[in-house]
Every structure is written in structure tokens, then in C-alpha cells.
Length: 569
Image (cartoon, rainbow, N blue to C red; front, side):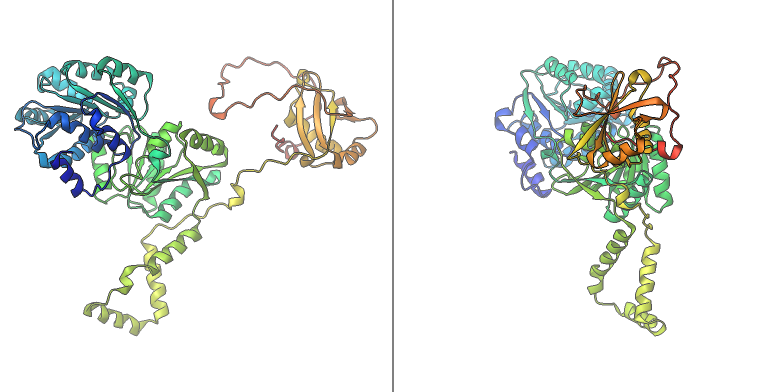
């Protein structure tokens, strides 16, 4: 490794390289084009900085005076470009590199002046760089290497045409390194067009790329989803936390509520200008704000050093977004927590997301008010200031206090003053109300009944269940599977309840509305139940044709009985 870069790494405390850094700095790939799959937070910025060094510096330890740029890094967003600029600046500081940015939202006149003075590396967003090329403000003729960072996001954001224009303007002899969390067909096409025999470098994703992130599924009642966000923020008391929501409206709602509860919070959503985004992120970096509420789109490319906690107030749409959100914490060897707020109705979706992302989560209850107050007390008792000797001024004031109040009153008053300065926790529902319902065990001994109604009579399990309970004087737990066929329906009944059921129905074996009931000797031969549609992929019912009048049938049971939910089939 070049000495000036090795010294910069040592100064920053890099004892070992990450997996992606080791892979892309393999001496065998020193001159190769690369297509690299690496997740956010894997250390890829320093990785491609090291990979560029042999191409940009050759055998030299430092750069010659800046002129036309030698290296070009393209990133999808202004925030990510500025983050890359900061990383490359310290990495190449000892080599005397001049790193210049060309990004949207900045004064283009200042950028043109900086480019005219000369640069070794230009870090840019696609649209602004293309504008500078078309105006003749940047000369790409000396470019030796180009890096496309977060290439998949650039395609998602519609920069395909800009990238093709930029790469076509760079010399054909350049190296091209593409970094992408995923490799969709568009990335493969771009690689085939603008790379020469690219080496595919795939860094372990999923849990391997997120080894320092503790995933938690936080089970809460429907009404407590927002309250759980408040309690998680209070319990973990992270220096930096980000809360993800799916819409601008939800971002505004959460940010307003957290602000009203005393949290130092900023919001990031699509309607903010670049200046507003910059001020919000700077407030997070300098400690004026500790919580950022954002949508996925607005958070693209942002970097919050030391981020300890990610909260998914609303679940992401897919596993890739889950990993991308979570990857903002647990970086550079630091530990982080990614907490998913999971209400009963989205429990299965959360389990799918985690399974497809190939990460395992610990399922936990949201911190209760008692948990948070106990943590406050433990934090106070463990504060190192208790062991610091009092100064003369402090001792004099302590003597005045003790002359007026007892030690017990003093301690209680101190606790009250502390709690005035922190957000009060929320009371949450009993966990028994949010635990997933255990599946009912199968009957060890059962009998089957046949009913003389089926699909042709518009029969439904949710209608038959209360009808059977009312007619037979039994609870719904005594009824197992209900299968509705074309002209008949079949009902499984616990054998222990069969005698009482038949006695209540009577010798006529007839239910309300003239429905005939027959006790079968064995399990009927019937088709399996239709598959339940995935809640997230149900077809739209708009424009559904009129199904016509239903034939007359027995009256529906009273509301109290009809609300009973049938057993899952």
C-alpha cells in the first residue's frame, strides 16, 4: 500500500480492512475494471479510494500539481457526494490531493472556478457534472479512473442517460469501478457497455454485511405504534437516531409529535429544498438535533456519523430497503440497533422481510414506562460524577441545601428535577394483547358433518360458524375446519362436543333456514381450501361486477354472535 495512504488509515485507527476493502485492493485487480456488490455501511468509500490509488498515483507517493482531473467519482445524491469528498480528502491528504465537488444545490460558478484552478479528483452528481461538461467547465481528457457509487440508486433516480453521456465523454482507456448494493439488469447493461472485462466482486450481503446490527421486532398494539417510537427513543437514549416512515404526511406527523414531546428532532422529506436538507443534517451532526424522521427517498445518501439507532415506524416495502435503511447504523465496527415497529396486522409481513433479507431478529416487547424509569434510575446511580470530589463552591452550596432539607428530600428533589428535563414515557398496552395468536391445536378425535348449502347458495364459513354455535349450544373452539363446496359444506366437530350438539339440534337434524345436517361416518373426500391471498399483493376490487341478488337464506345471527371470527383454515 502507498505509504501516505497507510499513514492516513493508521491515523484514523484502521487496524484491519473490511471485507470489501480487502477484496477491491487485491493486487491482482490493480488494473482491472470491477463490478462490486456491497451494502451500505461496508466501508466501500475507503475501499474504492484505496483501489484508485495505484491508477491515480502510479509509483509516486504524492500527486503532481493539480491540473485536469485524474479521477472521477459519481454519486446519486448531494449528501452522498459530500460524504465521499470528506472521506477521500482525509485518505489522500498526505498525498497532496485536491478534491473538488460538482453537485446540485451548490453555486455552479464557485464549482467552475474550483475546476479551473485544477483538481486531482472530482466528486459529482450526474446532472451537475453533465452540465459542466456541456459548458466546457471540466476537462475529462486526463481521466484515468471513474467510480460509480450506488449505481443502482442512480438508475432508480433516472440518471441512466446522464451516466451514459458522462462515460462516453471519458477516455476509453480509463478504469471503471461500479459499486452497487444490487445488480439489476440495468446495471449489467451499463457494465457491458462501459467496462472492459469487468471482474465481478461480490461481498457477503445480508447478515454478513450487517454483523454489527442487532435487529429487533418490537411487538405493539395497533394503537401504540407511535407511542412505541417514543419509548424506544427514550429507552436507548441514542446520540443519533433515525426514524423511517413511508410518506411525507407520516414524517410530518411523527416529527411534530416528537418535537411536542421534547425531542430535538429534524424532518427529511421530498418537499425540502437543498438548503433545508443541509441545515437539518448539520443539526444532527453538531448535536443540536438527535432524532431525524425521514422517508426512504429523502434519506438516500445521507451519512450520520455514530448513528446508533434505526427505527422503522412503518415497515419498508421490501427486504432490500430494510437492509439499506438499517445499514446506516453499525458502521466501522460500532454496534447499532435496527428496530421494526410491528403491530399484529403486519406481523407476517415483518417476518417475510426479515426472512428475505436473511437476517434474524430478536422479538421483544416495546420498553414500558416502568422499564424506562428504571433505566433512568440506573443511569443516575451509575453516573461517574458521584465519585468526583466536590469543589469548595459546590461543598458550600451542598451545606446550604442540607441545612434546609433532609438527605432523602434532597435526593427526591434531584430525581424530580432530572425527570423534568426528559420526555415522559408512554403507557403501552399489555403484551398479552399484542402477542401473536397461537394456532389452535388440531383435534385428536373429531367427527364431520355435512350441510346442505354450498357456494351455489352463497354459503360462507363466517356465516356458518355462528349458525352452528347457536344451533348446537357450543363454543367456536369445538368447531375445527369448515369447507364450503359447490352444493354442500363440511364441518369438523370435536368428538367430545358431538352428543350435546346433536341433542340441541334435535332429531330433525335441521338448522335455521331449512339447512339439513348429516353426521358422516368418516372424513369426506373434498377439495383443499383455496389459498389465502397475500395481503400485500391482493388484486384490486375496483370495478368488480355486480354479483346479483343472493338467494334467500337463514337470517344472519345478531351482531354480537356474527362478529365471532371463524377459525383459520
